[in-house]
Image (cartoon, rainbow, N blue to C red; front, side, top):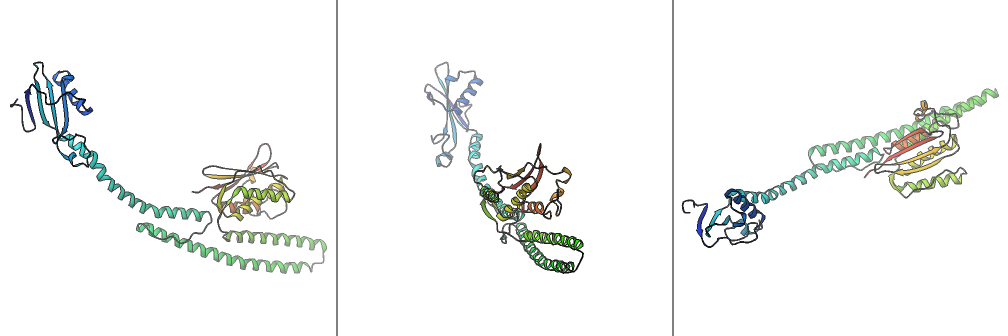
Length: 375
C-alpha cells in the first residue's frame, strides 16, 4: 500500500473500515457507482464520504468560514478476504472550482449588472420622457419645457425639442394675428359690395347678386371660423366619453330629432372635449340632414376607442367618399358651405385619430371615428 500512496492519497488495508456504512449523498453515490463499474466490485461493498478536511460537510454554506476548507474523499472497499481497503484522497480541484464559480459568478456579475441597469435607466429615461412629450404634442397638447438630463446626446435632443415648441408657439400666435387682420380685410370689401348692390334697380339682378354675396360671406366666415378654431388651443382634460355621448343624445331628443343610442359603460378619455363634441355634432347633423336618422355606437380595444355614426340614407358615391372631406365639397346640394366634414376630420386628426366614411349594405352610411389610447 505504501507503494501507491503519495501526497494526494493514502491507502492501507485494515480489518476496520475507515467509512462505516451510511446513507450516502447523491455525489458520493455517483462516485461509488463509477468505482464499482471500474473495479467490477458490487457497489454495496463500497462506501465513500466526501467532506472537508476539518470534518465539516462538503456542501457547507459558501459564506461560512468552514466552507473554505479543502475537500477530501474517504473510502472503504470490503474485500472478499474480510479485510477492508481504506483510502483518504484529496479531491480534484474541479470540485473546488465548480463550487467557487457557483457563488463567485453571481457575486461578481450582480454588482456589474446593477451598475449597468442604473446607467441604462439614466440613458433611457430622457428618451422616454421625450417620446411621451412628442406623443402629447401630436395630440394637440402643449407641454412645458423639458429639463435636460442624461447623456450629452439626450440633452441636445431635449434642447432641440424645447426650441421646436417655442417656434411652433410663435407660428400659431403669428397665424392668429394674421387671421384677425384677414377677417377685417375680407369683410370690408364684402360690406362695400352690399352697399353697391342696393343701388341696383333691376329686382331680379339685385336678388341674384345679393344671394351670391351672402354665399361668399358665409364661405369667408366659415373658413375663418375653421382656421381660427384650429389655432385656438383648448385645454386638454379627462372626461367620460360615454357621458358626452349621453349628453349629445339628450340634446337631439330635446330638439325633436332623437338618435338611436343604447348607452355604454363609463369610459374615461383624455382629450379636448369641445373639439370632440364639435366633430361628433357635425357628423350627427350630416346624418340627420341627408338621411333623416342617426345612430351612435361605441366600443374600445386595448389600442383605440371606436365611435360610429350610422344612418339609413342613400350613402355617398364611392368616387366622392374622400373628396367630401375637402373644404366646400358637398356630396349633395344643401344648406351650408361644405366645411362640416373638413372640421370633423381636423378635430379627430388633431387627437392623433382617424375619421373615415363607409357605405353600408344594403343602404346607409357609416362614419367611423378612431381615437388612440395612450398609457
